[in-house]
Length: 196
Image 1 (tube, rainbow, N blue to C red):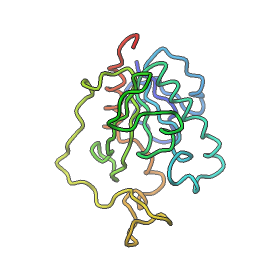
Image 2 (image 1 turned 135 degrees about the vertical axis):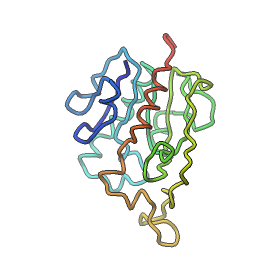
Image 3 (image 1 turned 90 degrees about the horizontal axis):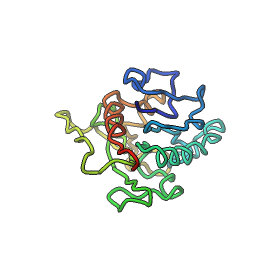
Image 4 (image 1 turned 120 degrees about the vertical axis):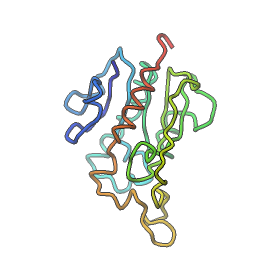
């Protein structure tokens, strides 16, 4: 069993069909006390480069991400956050390619388009309790990388005035987890070693 934490179950969610123990605001994922490994998706807006555009309700959820780090360190599993998230520096997470931290955790950089997201969506995964050599292969789809990137300049547009693919997506689709990515994250969490 894998516990999927900090989900938005008001929208279609792939973790339900994967048989996970799903925790959203109704169940209050801050109360999750094990014993299963976790896949954590805490709100990223308050930690991202675009935090200035977050409303008060989202900013009030900033405390959830450090709690999710603690849960991943306690039970093992994976935490998903945008590449470059300020959460990494705040919580002492290693940079991608860096040495593991005191919890044996490491950070893996991926792009969600490889699992079917409509934008490139660079993402950092903080993983605890899993041997890096056993991480499942990252898909190499036959389709081309989506046009645009998530790189932004002041004002939210890329150099040259073009908006990134992520910016062009409706807000309702930007944060959605592709079903194939969710299944891959569950596979990673299922590799957590007992008593790591």
